Structure formats: structure tokens, C-alpha cells
Image 1 (cartoon, rainbow, N blue to C red):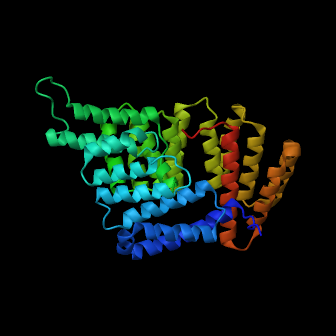
Image 2 (cartoon, rainbow, N blue to C red):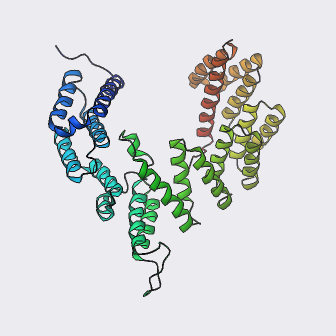
Image 3 (cartoon, rainbow, N blue to C red):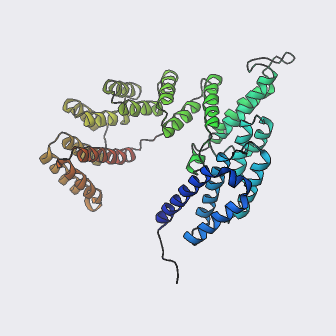
Length: 398
């Protein structure tokens, strides 16, 4: 009898549970696994075939990668290059798709850095610089350390009166980070985790690059993106301070600062950012939109009315204004007025008013006696309308 079909989402959930069980086993039995890696992998494959025989090749190989990285990180032999190479070689052989050893070589390169084998790390990692934003800084760091062994990073070559070649190489790697523009946290999204030491190296090199290239915004932008994804609010705050000092007209940084102040419930700070946006971009709709959004969240009628007049003068799309009016009335607790706005939205949106159906359900929760439910409804409504308006107004996030 054929295996019952299951959606990919269910398969992934089951794989996650199996992975969790294996992770627990690995952490408690490292010596046993180190002593006989093939037997352990035989157990892994047998479990997969018994539990999920029809799992896709991609999910199968990703699972093997996850298990392999966990074995390496837990092993007492993780500092032995021969053991690492043997482990990766065996894992590669049992993967269904022979796509090369890119992932394993990246991990091995990072291990080389931790072991102080910097030339070897450079050789391994250089070809994977476009994979993740961590890698260029890691390679650059290797050059910095090699330079420090020859003398200070700021020392000059006595013969040629120029920075040492290794310092130039380090700078070149950070320039490559901008040119290649690799994704942030791709390795983490591949569920292999991140080496804490490599993360420290990333921040060290980003800060160094900000000193080396004070007129280059991209190092700050990449840092802000990673700090946001990693939940490093202290680092993000420091980077935003530098960004606004150096690039006070840059809308990306102003937008990030606005969001940061809003998350911190800093009403005065939010108002200050909106004011700065308007000063720098008096003819644009975007600063006015953020003023409207702030007025809705804080439920300030005078402020909302003022920004609404400005929005009309800038020819804001009618659909956006209809949704914002509805949001303001609903946040103000005016159910009758909000209902009237919703009816008008249905008329204006015409046959595409299916989005309004969802808003109706959310609006209904505003009447709940459950404070938590009301809070969730407010967040859902504001987030939804915000995303719609950002897309309609073509407000970018970079």
C-alpha cells in the first residue's frame, strides 16, 4: 500500500522532531559517536527510512547536514582536522545529491580560524564569499591577524611607505563584501547554527570597516540588518547613532530609526524622526505616511488631521487614505464610524474587496472583553494595513 500523502509542512514538522531527538542523543553520547561514526549514521539513515521513506532529496540532505554539524559541534575531537574531514567525507557520501562540499568546507574554514590556521581558512573560505555576509569579514580577519603577527595593523612598510599587503588584503575583502552583497544569515536559515566566535569576528570587522571607509554606508546597513535579525538591539542602537550622524539624509536609516524608536515606545523620539524626515524630504509622501501611522498608533486626532491634510496635498492614493481613516476610527474606539469607513472601502475596492473581509473579522475582535485579544487584533490590523500601504506607496526597505 502506498504511503499516505502528507503536506511538506507536516513532513518538516516530523523531521524537526526527529532532529530534536537526535540532537539530544548526540549531546549525551558524543564519545560513543566519535568512536564509531559509520554506525551512528547507519542509525540515522535507518530512522529516516522507517519514519519518512518518501522524504524529498532536499529535506533528506538538509537533515544530514544538520546532524553532521551538531556532531561536530558536540564532539570532543572537533579540533582535529583529520576527524573533521573524515566526518564530512562520510556525511557527503550518504547525501542523496552530490552537490559538492560547500557547506562542509565553510564550516571547516571557520574551524580553521578557531584553531589559528589562518592561511588554510582563507584558502577554504574565499570561494564562498557570496554565500553569507559572515564570510568576507572572516577572511578579512585572517589577513588582519596575519598582519598583526608582522606588526601593528596601522604600521607602515618601511621600504614602500604604504600599508602592509595583508592590511590591504583585509580591506579588499571588506570591499568585496559590498560588491558581492551576500545575504545576511543565510547560514543560520540553513539551520546549521552560527559559531559565536565567527559572529564576534563579523562585528569586529564591520566596526573596523566603518573606521576604514567612513563615507561608505553599506557597512552600517549590513550591520543594522544583521543586528535586527539577531535581536541585538544594543548594537543596532549604536549603529543607528553612527548612521544618523554620517548619513542624516539617508531615508533607509531614518526609517530604521523610526521603527526602533516606535518599538521602544519613545513617542518623542518617533516625532523627532518624522520631523527630520519631512525636513529632508519635504516633497515626498513617505514622511507624511509615517506621521499618519504614528498618529493612528497614539490615537491623536489633531496630529492625524494635520498629516491627513498634508497627505491630500501630496495626492496620496485614495485606497491608502480610506484604510488609514478606518484604522484611526477603529483605534479611537469609534465602531460606528469605523463601520462606515469599511462600507466605503468595499465600494471603492469593488470586486477586489476580499481583503476587507479579513479586516472585518479583525475589527470584530476590538469588541472583545479579553484585553489580550484586543491587543492582538490592534497589532494585526495595524501591521496588515501598514504592509498594504507601504506596498501601495512603493516605500522600500533598503
